[in-house]
Every structure is written in C-alpha cells, then in structure tokens.
Length: 236
Image (tube, rainbow, N blue to C red; front, side):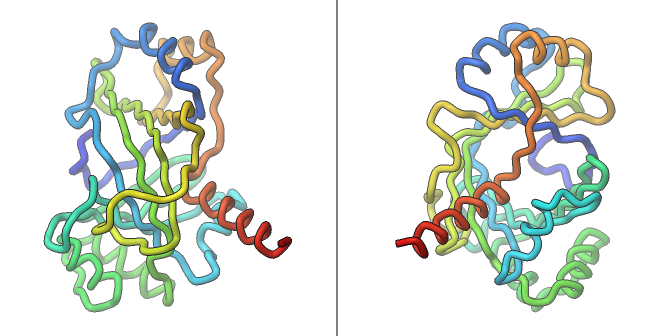
C-alpha cells in the first residue's frame, strides 16, 4: 500500500520495542519483506477534537466503536500543497480509513464549513463534521517512519516510527515538525498492518524475540502527557 491509498480496512497491531529488538527481529523476517515504495519519510498530523477533548477521552475508554478525524501531510508543507483529510474508524479491532486528497488551503476551508463535498468520502467527512459541531485542530503529532511490505502479500505492511513529537500550540502542517518527545530515544513503535490473519512466519519471529502486542495511541499518549503536565502545574 502506498501513501495515495484512499480506502481500506485492516487490522493494525502495535508493539513498543527497542532499537536492539528491531535489529534482532529484522534478520529473521528479512526474506519475507521488502522496502515499501515509500521507505523513509516524515508524517505530520493535526488531530481534530472538541475543546474538552471529547473524542480522545472516549477513545481511551476503549469502546467497541470509535472514530477520529485528522489532517495528514508528509513533511512540512505550504498552503497550496496536497494533504490528506482522513476519517479513521475502528470497530471490533478492524480499522476502516477513508481519506481524500486536497490542497492544504482547501482542506482548512472544508473543515471550517466553507467547502462542498465532492464524492462519497468527502460526504462522509462532511456528515461527521455536521454531527460534531465545534471540533477544531487540537494537537499536532509528527514522527519519522520506515516502512516495509510483504513480498508475497502486498497487503502486509510493517512500519517503524521514531522521534514522535507532539504539541498543542500551533497545530498547523505548515510549521516545522517540533514538540515534546513521546518516546525515549531508543524506543520505536512498530505497527503490523494486515488484512486477515498474521502470517505464521511473522507470529513465530515475534514470539522468538519476545515482542508482544500493546495498546498505543499516539494522540492518546500525548493527551495523557498533557493531563500529567496540567496536574504538575496545579501542584506547584
């Protein structure tokens, strides 16, 4: 899957690992995977939420169904460059993503209610906006990603994220990636994205290297850090 895919549904499994764990895992799975067409790149996101962070608070309660809306670019961009407006839903462990590409300027207008829906995906996003009045850019999160895909199964993807940064101030894709670190320097967030079951060779490799699935939401973790910072300020 490349960066221009606009519709898909899949499982997304997450693992918080060290660099050494990845270095040990890669040789055992290397013959089954290859570098993705876009192998190394920077992802920048602006997450939409209400002023009281209603969506991320609900998401952290782990409901059966949850959804979120975000703007995504690949690196710092200008107002006339392309971004993806993404509506991401999760139901019973399956992720459904709908995304549409438009200029950064047009995406901001669309989110503010000025744009018109062209096509099914934009209609879905517009319906979400109409049902959730008052949401606005709430948090900026960026990270550096390396991506691989299966040699025999192109739907299998493995991504490794590092240098995850978050900030509340100036949540804008035109600004340079910066913010507070979400991981330690040695930590990596590995995601395995697949349609159907994970292949046995990958399951065995994870088990041999004692790599275990975890629950990890970048937006959720950043929101938790925000709450901790607020609590520390009140205690002073």
